[in-house]
View: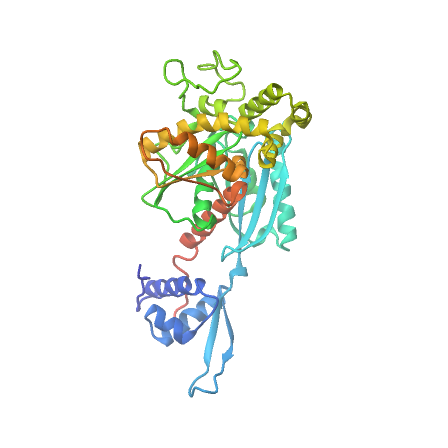
Length: 426
C-alpha cells in the first residue's frame, strides 16, 4: 500500500512526517536523499520533517557519508531511534507470569518469568507480576518512565475496551478490573488487557516462523484449551469476544460420541457434571489433569512403578512431569498422549468442518511434545471423512502470549503516536 503524503498545511506536514517515520522505521538507516525519493517528497520537505522528528527524539542524524568516487554533496544519514521508548508484553496464567521488554522496533531487550504457587490469591498474583516487571526493567536499565505502552494476556473472557476480566474460571480471583487497575497505577502508561490465546495467535503470526496464513487456528493446549481464529487475515473475536472457547465443547456426551479408547471405565458418568476447577467438558477430557490421570493409569497397567512414583512425587507439577516423560519416550506417557490425541482429534475435526482453516497450530505446554503429538493427531484425523488442515506446533510455545502482547503495544503506538507526528511551522 502506498504511504500517504501531502504538502501545504500544518496538518499535511504532520501527514508527511508520519509517512517519513513509517519508512524510516523499516530501515536500519537511510540517506535524506534516498528517503525523499522513497516517500515522493522534496529533499527540503523531508529535511523539515526530520528536524521536527529529531526534536521529539524519534530520529537521529548520523555523520556525513563521503564517497570519493562521487562528486557533490555528501549523503546525510538518518536513523529511527528505537531506544526512544519501550513497550511491555505480559502473560499471566495459573502456572506462571512472563514479562518481555522491547524497544520501538520490536527488539526484545529483557525477559523474566516466575512460577506461581497453586494457592496464590488475586492480589498476590498481581504483585508477583509487578515485581517480575520491575526485575525485567532493571535488567534493561529502564524505569517505568521509559514505557510507552503495556499489553497483557490472561486466561478467560476479557472486555478489551475496558480491560475488565468478565470470566476467568482458572483464576477467579482476578475477575474484574484488579489487574488493569494495578498495572495502570504502577506502570504509569496505557495498559491493554486481552484473552491470552488471542494474543498468542497474533504473536505466532508475527514471530512464529513468520506465519502469514490468512486462515489458521491456533489452539492453546495445556491445563485448559482455547483457540485463536484468523479468518481472511484478521483475528476473529465473535460477538462477545470469546470465539474459540473450544474447551466448552461437549463432544462426548452420552449418545453423541463414544471413545473406544477408554481402558479403565473411569469416565462413566462424567459427561454433564461440572468440574470443580471450572473446566469445560472438552478440556476435562483432554487437558492437563486428564493427561496426568491417563499416564498414571497407563503406568499402573504396565507395572511401571518408577514412573507412577515420579508422577505422585511431582505433586502440583505432575503435568510437567508427564510431558517430560513424553519427550523422553516413556511408553506409559506415550500411551496417555495417544488417548487424549484421539479425543483432541475430534475437536480439530469440528473446527475443520466449521471453519476449514489452512493450518492448525498447537501451542501451550503440549507443544513441547512436538512431532510425537502431531503424529498421533494425524493418525487419528486420518479416520475423518473430510480433508484435514495442516498441523504444526508453535515455535514460540509458551512465549507466544508475550510476543502477541508486544505486537499489540507496538501497533497501538503506531496508531496513537506515530500516526500523526506534531511538527512545527517552518
